[in-house]
Length: 433
Image (cartoon, rainbow, N blue to C red; front, side, top):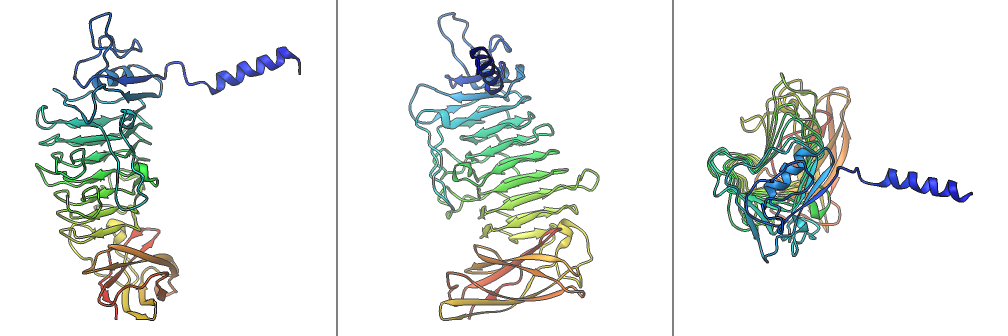
């Protein structure tokens, strides 16, 4: 290949691989709350001195809003330990794509525990203690944005921790402590929900990796509210792998004042979306573990650990246990999917066999998941699942052998059924004998 052609190819490749010229990283070096001097000049600087450049979180957001690129906000505040940023007024609405990464602060550490707890060490705390009642922590209206590695607390009154608004489609909230102190053990709740999404979709709250796990606890300190509230025409929102209502150990109580996860929608706004609530620990909340209210959307509640909440672990509509009906023709939240009926749960040797039946829509497939519990119709420990298909009359029986472990005598087992229209409430419990 001639040298000139090779050089031309290298130039083209470098242009294609480079970041957009207007995408910048702004590094916060001050925990004060001053505004940027010249938003849009590409330099986060709040200091009038030509010899000192200081960047605040407010200034970094102002710069990111003024530019069109996919910007990033990092942290390098020079002091050791937790750095608390206390805005005096509400921070600017985030209107452009931006990644705010608290784990860039020296000494901060992401979670490495595979399941059920977090050992994350966030060192950037965003506190609403000095701000007027009703202000929220971060309000995001820029698509594909990311908030990671922050402690967000004490935004009181009608204040929310993190809000994802209509134009924030595709955004992620991961690896944060929302409603607790930086140790993840003390209640520093926001006035309303910890995370709230409104009229948007494709969000992920948490994720499948350990580092994405949020701790969302202690919220609703002023008005009863949920840890995570998903509202109106949400589409394809994932709430996955979080601790909702516990301390960072995943087993001690630090509940949100109302429900763990709320899914609310209205037929006027609904755009056939769904919410996936998967592999979370949802415990010690004042109301239901998961409440689905209002719509015929299909919401999937799978493989979670849900226990010790003030109300039902799953409630389809705010009305307590929903009775089954023949062939399941009714409508409502998750179309009021019928739940399984467990007939027996017996242990022989090292194996536990769970037998039951399901009546629902005819000639349909359903995923039946099984859980063990010390008490009641909740779902503390996921123990396995099986796929079943109903016949022409809507009936199917099943016999499931719990793999690898024995559920002790005296424990309770429960089950849910999930079809194309969403997940049921938990079945009535059956005691293992």
